[in-house]
Each structure stands twice: as C-alpha cells, then as structure tokens.
Length: 132
Image 1 (spheres, rainbow, N blue to C red):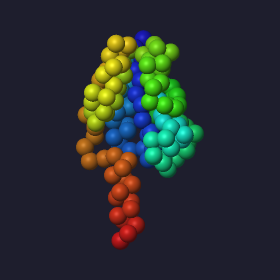
Image 2 (cartoon, rainbow, N blue to C red):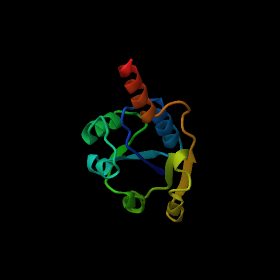
Image 3 (cartoon, helix red, strand yellow):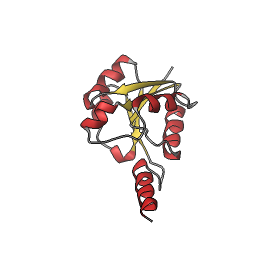
Image 4 (cartoon, rainbow, N blue to C red):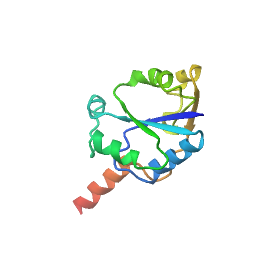
C-alpha cells in the first residue's frame, strides 16, 4: 500500500482543493490530509472561516480522503512521514522547493495549482462584492 500525505488549511473548500486531493489520492492507495489547527493558523497570522473541527469534518466527507490529522507546527512533517509510513508527500507548486528536505524520507511532489482559484481570491472577491 502506498501512503500519500498533503498539508493545508483547507478553508472555504473550492475546486482547487478537490483537484489537489483527487490528484494526490491518484498517486497512492491511502491519502492523509494534515490540516492546520486553529492555534497553528493563529501563529501563522491566519484566520480560517471554519474551525478546525468543521474543516476536519468536511474533509472526512470527501471520497479521496482516508484520514485527517492536525498540523500543529511547521516541524512535524518529518514525524508525520515516519509515524504514518508515508511514501509520497504532495503540495501545490507554490511551495516548490520548501519541502525538499523530506526527500530523504519519502518522494516529494509539487503539483500545479488550479488556475484562477484560491481561498484568498474567494475572500477578496467577497470583500469586493460587499463594498459595491
């Protein structure tokens, strides 16, 4: 069995999220999604619309996702890869090069992001519409 892992906040779920989850799952048999905890988001200066518990429940309902775990800090990736016997680490290409250090533990792949969509863009579009 080939285990794949990816990380993210996964707030305001959109087609870009579904695309990366589908493509990550296609790379193996078992997909683990590590989502940023509310506390970790606060440390990063981010605020998700949905709570960790809600984001976890939403992701668990997606057919591509086999397991959802919390991401509590930047440093836990090596421990997660070892703990879950991960074969493949997957992230969007906007992170290219940032996680190459994991290559000594598993394969590292950066997938192209879906053009024209992001949670940041959705939030910006909603703010623009609200101001009209």
